[in-house]
Image 1: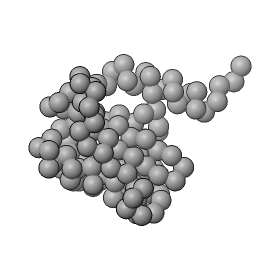
Image 2: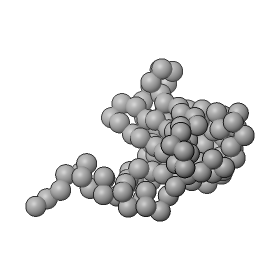
Image 3: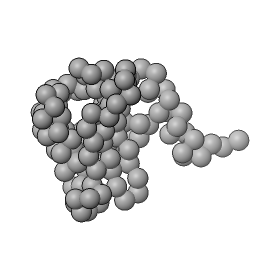
Image 4: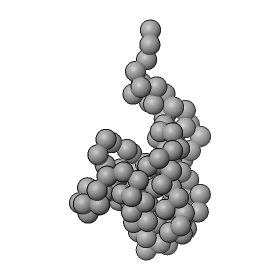
Length: 114
C-alpha cells in the first residue's frame, strides 16, 4: 500500500514533534505552508498559547520565496517586541528547502536564534 504525500508528511511531522517542544523562554517556531500562503507561529507548548503569528494573507505580499522572506522578517520583529531572542524551529514535516528555508533565514537575519 502506497502512502500519499500528506500521510508521509504527517509521519515526519509527528516524528519531529516528539523531539521539538517550545517553552515560554524558548518557543517553537512552527511553519505551515499551503499552495498560496505561508504561516509562522511562535508557540509556547507548556501552556498551549500562540505568542506571535505572521502570514502573507492580509499584507498582499504575493506568493513564493519573497513572501516567505517577508513573513520571516515579520515574525522576527514580533518576537523582538515580546523580548524573545531564541526559539526552536519546527518545519512541520516539510523539506528545509524553498519557502521554508527562506522564512527561516529571514527570521535569523531579523534577530531570532535557532
